[in-house]
Image (cartoon, rainbow, N blue to C red):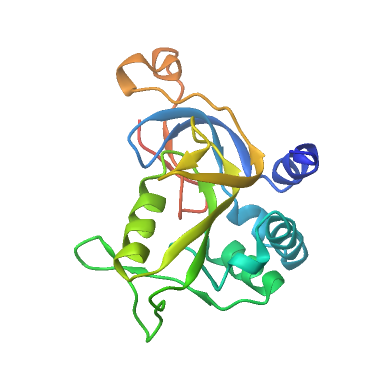
Length: 197
């Protein structure tokens, strides 16, 4: 991307791009973690990122923007605001799946842009795409602040991102940070992360 360096500097300056020994939601371990919520704390930064992502999307092909809970909601809203399109989001059910609630929904035939904060394995993104397709909507674009995936696409959709990061992920039994005795942190919604090993 032409301005990757700008966004990487912003992620680093805001403490969103972290170094250490992290337990990812996939169960894999990583020496870097991207916590976009740190960057999105500043409304000006959130608006700038949303506008930059929106400019990379096919405006005329998008009827609505949808983001999964929770970390992607701010950037999804900012992309929708920049595109001047409606924004909705699903929520987790008690069974752990995604479902639209609060009267929010997508219409059959709508063209949807899915916007994420970070895509790593793409598990949540795939789940959201399936929910949207089951609702009769067509997912026409996929965007993220940071693409950590190995393939740069999900379900045939290329990932449009502000930064593409090549960060290794390790199964616990071959993790070099585990072998070196570096404490394992489970990041996420906890402000400081939780030391788990």
